[in-house]
Length: 245
Image 1: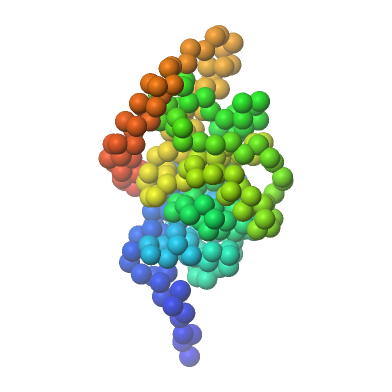
Image 2 (image 1 turned 45 degrees about the vertical axis):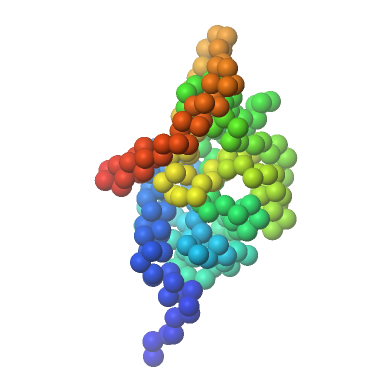
């Protein structure tokens, strides 16, 4: 006898949700291609249209380069798996569920990407958004959470991180990594990619030992506004990644 699907399992195969699963899998493969992955750790997630209490998440145990749409799992706001063939990793459940539930973010990308993570180890804890043009797009958009508490293995730590974001869509987690959020997967991935590029440039510039020349904060604000007003480039970049990967 064929098992009866729950409403959530039926929703998992809805064409709009299937497209989201495909886009989330593409973002993960792109991140692997760009060197932003770390083993089988870290996670990307996105809430379902009209259902902010449900979100899609990459599964436990798969490298990002191998994730396909059918590998993505569906989880509720408390981190319970509702649909999908794989298990989920506990820290993903606690961090992502809390950021979706408490901070009300649609798409949440958490990585330990090398250059951004390197800056979380410094006294500054984060990117200087007055240096490169890529860095300026993030001016007044990020916060720092420098309270490192080890692995997020309960709801309290996930909720603490969500509260520390204080409405910002990018957070540098001290001694840990970064979280990038947006209303769409393609916008979030574009920000993640260029955030790492900006951190890369800053780390390289600082490694020279030469004095750095920051731009005026007003110019940094102008550049951030320019990027925010023209997001077609983000869409085209994600489409190009789809063709390549």
